[in-house]
Length: 353
Image (cartoon, rainbow, N blue to C red; front, side, top):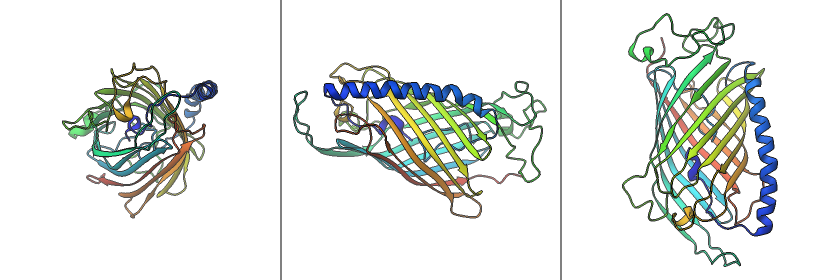
Protein backbone atom coordinates (compact mmCIF):
# COMPACT_ATOMS: atom_id res chain seq x y z
CA UNK A 1 0.00 0.00 0.00
CA UNK A 2 1.24 3.49 -0.82
CA UNK A 3 1.43 4.76 2.76
CA UNK A 4 2.52 8.31 2.03
CA UNK A 5 -0.01 8.84 -0.73
CA UNK A 6 -3.06 8.30 1.47
CA UNK A 7 -2.62 11.62 3.24
CA UNK A 8 -4.71 14.74 3.74
CA UNK A 9 -3.68 18.19 2.42
CA UNK A 10 -1.14 20.25 4.32
CA UNK A 11 -3.27 23.01 5.79
CA UNK A 12 -2.36 25.43 8.62
CA UNK A 13 -3.48 24.65 12.18
CA UNK A 14 -5.21 27.18 14.44
CA UNK A 15 -2.98 27.97 17.43
CA UNK A 16 -5.25 26.23 19.96
CA UNK A 17 -5.43 23.11 17.79
CA UNK A 18 -1.63 23.10 17.36
CA UNK A 19 -1.08 23.11 21.14
CA UNK A 20 -3.58 20.27 21.63
CA UNK A 21 -1.96 18.32 18.80
CA UNK A 22 1.51 18.81 20.29
CA UNK A 23 0.35 17.45 23.67
CA UNK A 24 -1.25 14.45 21.94
CA UNK A 25 1.94 13.92 19.94
CA UNK A 26 4.06 13.74 23.11
CA UNK A 27 1.65 11.26 24.71
CA UNK A 28 1.58 9.10 21.57
CA UNK A 29 5.35 9.24 21.14
CA UNK A 30 5.90 8.02 24.71
CA UNK A 31 3.43 5.16 24.19
CA UNK A 32 4.88 4.14 20.81
CA UNK A 33 8.47 4.25 22.10
CA UNK A 34 7.53 1.93 24.97
CA UNK A 35 5.73 -0.45 22.60
CA UNK A 36 8.69 -0.78 20.25
CA UNK A 37 11.10 -1.30 23.15
CA UNK A 38 8.96 -4.12 24.54
CA UNK A 39 8.06 -5.71 21.18
CA UNK A 40 11.42 -7.35 20.31
CA UNK A 41 11.50 -9.08 23.70
CA UNK A 42 8.01 -10.52 23.28
CA UNK A 43 8.68 -11.73 19.75
CA UNK A 44 11.29 -14.22 20.96
CA UNK A 45 8.50 -16.39 22.33
CA UNK A 46 7.17 -18.05 19.15
CA UNK A 47 6.06 -17.95 15.47
CA UNK A 48 5.05 -15.30 12.98
CA UNK A 49 2.26 -12.90 11.97
CA UNK A 50 0.91 -11.89 8.58
CA UNK A 51 1.34 -8.24 7.56
CA UNK A 52 1.18 -6.64 4.15
CA UNK A 53 -2.09 -6.09 2.24
CA UNK A 54 -4.68 -5.22 3.41
CA UNK A 55 -2.67 -3.67 6.26
CA UNK A 56 -0.35 -0.65 6.27
CA UNK A 57 2.12 -2.59 8.45
CA UNK A 58 4.28 -5.10 6.58
CA UNK A 59 5.96 -8.28 7.84
CA UNK A 60 9.07 -10.40 7.06
CA UNK A 61 7.19 -13.11 5.13
CA UNK A 62 7.83 -13.65 1.41
CA UNK A 63 5.75 -15.56 -1.21
CA UNK A 64 8.21 -18.48 -1.48
CA UNK A 65 10.50 -19.55 -4.29
CA UNK A 66 9.00 -18.97 -7.76
CA UNK A 67 5.65 -18.01 -6.22
CA UNK A 68 3.55 -15.03 -7.29
CA UNK A 69 1.40 -12.93 -4.95
CA UNK A 70 -0.90 -10.48 -6.75
CA UNK A 71 -3.02 -8.09 -4.71
CA UNK A 72 -5.75 -6.06 -6.38
CA UNK A 73 -7.12 -3.55 -3.89
CA UNK A 74 -9.52 -0.63 -3.75
CA UNK A 75 -8.14 1.78 -1.14
CA UNK A 76 -9.51 5.02 0.26
CA UNK A 77 -8.65 7.60 2.92
CA UNK A 78 -10.87 10.52 3.89
CA UNK A 79 -10.99 13.44 6.29
CA UNK A 80 -13.31 16.51 6.38
CA UNK A 81 -11.08 18.39 3.92
CA UNK A 82 -9.98 15.80 1.38
CA UNK A 83 -9.89 12.27 0.11
CA UNK A 84 -7.30 10.02 -1.54
CA UNK A 85 -8.30 6.86 -3.41
CA UNK A 86 -6.59 4.09 -5.39
CA UNK A 87 -9.10 2.44 -7.73
CA UNK A 88 -7.56 -0.04 -8.03
CA UNK A 89 -4.05 -0.51 -6.65
CA UNK A 90 -2.00 -3.17 -8.47
CA UNK A 91 0.52 -4.84 -6.13
CA UNK A 92 2.56 -7.61 -7.81
CA UNK A 93 5.11 -9.69 -5.89
CA UNK A 94 7.45 -12.55 -6.84
CA UNK A 95 9.49 -14.86 -4.63
CA UNK A 96 13.14 -15.13 -5.61
CA UNK A 97 14.31 -17.97 -3.42
CA UNK A 98 12.78 -18.47 0.00
CA UNK A 99 13.86 -15.18 1.56
CA UNK A 100 13.64 -12.51 -1.13
CA UNK A 101 10.54 -10.83 -2.56
CA UNK A 102 10.48 -8.57 -5.62
CA UNK A 103 7.66 -6.04 -5.75
CA UNK A 104 6.10 -3.62 -8.20
CA UNK A 105 3.06 -1.53 -7.23
CA UNK A 106 1.15 1.08 -9.19
CA UNK A 107 -2.31 2.59 -8.56
CA UNK A 108 -4.97 4.39 -10.53
CA UNK A 109 -5.18 7.39 -8.18
CA UNK A 110 -7.91 9.92 -7.41
CA UNK A 111 -7.36 13.01 -5.24
CA UNK A 112 -10.37 14.90 -3.90
CA UNK A 113 -10.25 18.37 -2.31
CA UNK A 114 -13.43 19.44 -0.55
CA UNK A 115 -14.33 23.17 -0.53
CA UNK A 116 -13.14 25.03 2.57
CA UNK A 117 -14.07 28.61 3.57
CA UNK A 118 -11.46 31.30 4.17
CA UNK A 119 -10.04 31.55 7.69
CA UNK A 120 -7.88 34.02 9.57
CA UNK A 121 -4.85 31.89 8.72
CA UNK A 122 -5.53 31.08 5.07
CA UNK A 123 -7.61 31.75 1.94
CA UNK A 124 -10.65 29.80 0.80
CA UNK A 125 -9.91 26.47 -0.87
CA UNK A 126 -12.01 25.46 -3.93
CA UNK A 127 -13.14 21.88 -4.31
CA UNK A 128 -11.86 19.64 -7.09
CA UNK A 129 -11.43 15.99 -8.06
CA UNK A 130 -8.51 14.83 -10.22
CA UNK A 131 -7.45 11.37 -11.29
CA UNK A 132 -4.84 9.47 -13.28
CA UNK A 133 -1.90 7.14 -13.05
CA UNK A 134 -0.20 7.24 -9.66
CA UNK A 135 3.42 6.59 -8.77
CA UNK A 136 5.38 3.44 -9.51
CA UNK A 137 6.66 1.71 -6.38
CA UNK A 138 9.35 -0.95 -6.95
CA UNK A 139 10.81 -2.67 -3.90
CA UNK A 140 12.76 -5.67 -2.66
CA UNK A 141 12.19 -7.45 0.64
CA UNK A 142 14.96 -9.50 2.25
CA UNK A 143 14.30 -11.70 5.28
CA UNK A 144 17.90 -11.72 6.43
CA UNK A 145 17.31 -13.52 9.74
CA UNK A 146 15.06 -16.41 10.72
CA UNK A 147 15.05 -18.70 13.73
CA UNK A 148 13.42 -22.07 14.31
CA UNK A 149 12.69 -23.77 17.65
CA UNK A 150 15.68 -25.50 19.29
CA UNK A 151 18.16 -23.90 16.85
CA UNK A 152 21.15 -21.73 17.88
CA UNK A 153 20.32 -18.03 17.76
CA UNK A 154 23.20 -17.00 15.48
CA UNK A 155 24.78 -19.95 13.67
CA UNK A 156 23.31 -20.36 10.16
CA UNK A 157 20.41 -18.04 10.95
CA UNK A 158 21.38 -15.37 8.40
CA UNK A 159 21.14 -15.85 4.63
CA UNK A 160 19.57 -14.94 1.30
CA UNK A 161 17.89 -18.21 0.29
CA UNK A 162 18.99 -17.58 -3.30
CA UNK A 163 20.44 -21.06 -3.86
CA UNK A 164 16.91 -22.43 -3.91
CA UNK A 165 16.01 -20.04 -6.72
CA UNK A 166 18.44 -21.90 -9.00
CA UNK A 167 17.47 -25.39 -7.88
CA UNK A 168 20.48 -25.84 -5.58
CA UNK A 169 20.47 -26.70 -1.89
CA UNK A 170 23.56 -26.34 0.27
CA UNK A 171 24.14 -28.07 3.57
CA UNK A 172 25.05 -24.72 5.13
CA UNK A 173 21.63 -23.25 4.36
CA UNK A 174 19.60 -22.73 7.55
CA UNK A 175 17.29 -25.66 8.26
CA UNK A 176 14.77 -26.05 11.07
CA UNK A 177 15.84 -28.32 13.91
CA UNK A 178 12.34 -29.69 14.13
CA UNK A 179 9.28 -29.56 11.90
CA UNK A 180 5.88 -30.75 13.19
CA UNK A 181 4.58 -33.89 11.51
CA UNK A 182 1.55 -32.06 10.15
CA UNK A 183 3.57 -29.15 8.68
CA UNK A 184 4.63 -29.19 5.02
CA UNK A 185 8.38 -29.25 4.51
CA UNK A 186 8.15 -26.09 2.40
CA UNK A 187 6.83 -24.14 5.41
CA UNK A 188 9.12 -24.89 8.38
CA UNK A 189 8.03 -23.44 11.69
CA UNK A 190 9.76 -20.12 12.51
CA UNK A 191 9.57 -18.46 15.90
CA UNK A 192 11.36 -15.24 14.95
CA UNK A 193 12.20 -13.49 11.70
CA UNK A 194 13.51 -10.07 10.71
CA UNK A 195 13.51 -8.36 7.32
CA UNK A 196 14.03 -5.09 5.53
CA UNK A 197 11.90 -3.87 2.62
CA UNK A 198 13.41 -0.83 0.81
CA UNK A 199 11.04 0.79 -1.71
CA UNK A 200 11.21 3.67 -4.18
CA UNK A 201 8.41 6.07 -5.15
CA UNK A 202 8.93 7.10 -8.78
CA UNK A 203 6.93 9.56 -10.89
CA UNK A 204 5.65 8.24 -14.21
CA UNK A 205 6.00 10.28 -17.45
CA UNK A 206 2.53 11.82 -17.09
CA UNK A 207 1.24 15.19 -15.83
CA UNK A 208 0.37 13.73 -12.43
CA UNK A 209 2.87 15.95 -10.54
CA UNK A 210 2.01 19.39 -12.05
CA UNK A 211 -1.70 18.58 -11.68
CA UNK A 212 -1.19 17.86 -7.97
CA UNK A 213 -2.24 14.21 -8.19
CA UNK A 214 1.00 12.90 -6.67
CA UNK A 215 3.90 14.46 -4.82
CA UNK A 216 7.13 15.17 -6.71
CA UNK A 217 9.53 12.22 -6.57
CA UNK A 218 11.62 10.31 -6.21
CA UNK A 219 11.68 9.42 -2.54
CA UNK A 220 12.89 6.34 -0.68
CA UNK A 221 11.32 4.30 2.14
CA UNK A 222 13.50 2.05 4.33
CA UNK A 223 11.72 -0.09 6.97
CA UNK A 224 12.61 -2.91 9.35
CA UNK A 225 10.07 -5.66 10.09
CA UNK A 226 10.02 -8.23 12.91
CA UNK A 227 7.40 -10.80 13.90
CA UNK A 228 6.54 -13.55 16.39
CA UNK A 229 3.78 -15.08 18.52
CA UNK A 230 2.73 -15.37 22.15
CA UNK A 231 0.59 -18.51 22.39
CA UNK A 232 -2.39 -18.04 20.02
CA UNK A 233 -1.71 -14.29 19.62
CA UNK A 234 0.26 -13.25 16.56
CA UNK A 235 2.41 -10.11 16.53
CA UNK A 236 4.07 -8.09 13.80
CA UNK A 237 5.96 -4.80 14.12
CA UNK A 238 7.42 -2.41 11.58
CA UNK A 239 9.34 0.84 11.86
CA UNK A 240 10.57 2.73 8.81
CA UNK A 241 11.90 6.05 7.61
CA UNK A 242 10.78 7.81 4.45
CA UNK A 243 13.60 9.89 2.94
CA UNK A 244 11.65 12.74 1.35
CA UNK A 245 12.89 15.34 -1.12
CA UNK A 246 12.73 19.09 -1.76
CA UNK A 247 8.92 19.01 -1.88
CA UNK A 248 8.03 16.08 0.40
CA UNK A 249 8.90 15.90 4.12
CA UNK A 250 10.87 13.10 5.62
CA UNK A 251 8.70 10.97 7.88
CA UNK A 252 8.58 8.05 10.29
CA UNK A 253 6.19 5.12 9.86
CA UNK A 254 5.45 2.78 12.78
CA UNK A 255 2.99 -0.10 12.84
CA UNK A 256 1.91 -2.89 15.17
CA UNK A 257 -0.35 -5.85 14.30
CA UNK A 258 -1.96 -8.11 16.92
CA UNK A 259 -4.23 -10.94 15.84
CA UNK A 260 -5.16 -14.58 15.55
CA UNK A 261 -5.63 -17.26 12.89
CA UNK A 262 -9.04 -18.70 13.71
CA UNK A 263 -8.72 -21.45 11.07
CA UNK A 264 -6.28 -22.20 8.27
CA UNK A 265 -8.55 -20.05 6.06
CA UNK A 266 -9.54 -17.17 8.34
CA UNK A 267 -7.36 -14.63 10.15
CA UNK A 268 -8.07 -11.24 11.74
CA UNK A 269 -5.84 -8.52 13.24
CA UNK A 270 -5.97 -5.22 15.05
CA UNK A 271 -3.58 -2.64 13.62
CA UNK A 272 -2.12 0.42 15.31
CA UNK A 273 -0.32 2.67 12.83
CA UNK A 274 1.44 6.02 13.19
CA UNK A 275 2.98 8.21 10.51
CA UNK A 276 4.73 11.44 11.48
CA UNK A 277 6.63 14.11 9.55
CA UNK A 278 10.24 14.56 10.67
CA UNK A 279 10.81 17.96 9.08
CA UNK A 280 8.99 20.91 7.53
CA UNK A 281 9.27 21.91 3.86
CA UNK A 282 9.41 25.68 3.03
CA UNK A 283 6.41 27.09 1.12
CA UNK A 284 6.14 27.15 -2.65
CA UNK A 285 7.62 23.73 -3.46
CA UNK A 286 4.50 21.54 -3.59
CA UNK A 287 1.35 21.37 -5.72
CA UNK A 288 -2.32 20.85 -4.83
CA UNK A 289 -2.83 18.37 -1.99
CA UNK A 290 0.93 18.28 -1.52
CA UNK A 291 1.35 22.02 -0.89
CA UNK A 292 4.26 22.94 1.39
CA UNK A 293 4.97 25.55 4.04
CA UNK A 294 2.62 24.22 6.71
CA UNK A 295 3.23 22.57 10.12
CA UNK A 296 4.36 18.97 10.40
CA UNK A 297 1.55 16.49 9.83
CA UNK A 298 0.69 13.24 11.57
CA UNK A 299 -1.68 10.29 11.24
CA UNK A 300 -2.51 7.89 14.08
CA UNK A 301 -5.01 5.15 13.27
CA UNK A 302 -6.51 2.08 14.89
CA UNK A 303 -8.04 -0.49 12.57
CA UNK A 304 -9.37 -4.00 12.12
CA UNK A 305 -8.77 -6.25 9.15
CA UNK A 306 -8.17 -9.76 7.94
CA UNK A 307 -8.09 -12.34 5.20
CA UNK A 308 -10.54 -15.04 4.20
CA UNK A 309 -9.65 -17.83 1.77
CA UNK A 310 -12.32 -18.19 -0.90
CA UNK A 311 -11.23 -21.56 -2.29
CA UNK A 312 -9.98 -24.84 -0.85
CA UNK A 313 -6.43 -24.37 -2.14
CA UNK A 314 -6.26 -20.93 -0.43
CA UNK A 315 -4.94 -19.34 -3.62
CA UNK A 316 -7.81 -16.83 -3.92
CA UNK A 317 -8.35 -14.68 -0.83
CA UNK A 318 -10.57 -11.81 0.24
CA UNK A 319 -8.74 -8.87 1.89
CA UNK A 320 -10.54 -6.38 4.15
CA UNK A 321 -9.39 -3.56 6.45
CA UNK A 322 -10.93 -0.46 8.01
CA UNK A 323 -9.40 2.09 10.38
CA UNK A 324 -9.77 5.63 11.66
CA UNK A 325 -7.87 8.09 13.78
CA UNK A 326 -8.45 8.09 17.52
CA UNK A 327 -7.10 11.64 17.71
CA UNK A 328 -9.19 14.78 17.11
CA UNK A 329 -10.27 14.90 13.45
CA UNK A 330 -10.68 18.32 11.86
CA UNK A 331 -10.50 19.89 8.40
CA UNK A 332 -7.16 21.45 9.36
CA UNK A 333 -5.16 18.37 10.28
CA UNK A 334 -4.25 15.12 8.58
CA UNK A 335 -6.02 12.75 10.97
CA UNK A 336 -8.24 10.53 8.78
CA UNK A 337 -11.95 10.05 9.36
CA UNK A 338 -11.45 6.61 7.86
CA UNK A 339 -9.08 4.47 5.82
CA UNK A 340 -10.37 1.35 4.08
CA UNK A 341 -9.02 -1.49 1.93
CA UNK A 342 -11.16 -3.99 -0.01
CA UNK A 343 -9.42 -6.36 -2.36
CA UNK A 344 -8.56 -9.84 -3.53
CA UNK A 345 -5.29 -11.76 -3.45
CA UNK A 346 -4.27 -14.33 -6.05
CA UNK A 347 -1.42 -16.76 -5.35
CA UNK A 348 0.23 -18.46 -8.33
CA UNK A 349 3.27 -20.66 -8.96
CA UNK A 350 4.50 -24.25 -9.01
CA UNK A 351 3.30 -26.51 -6.22
CA UNK A 352 5.83 -27.43 -3.54
CA UNK A 353 7.06 -31.02 -3.81
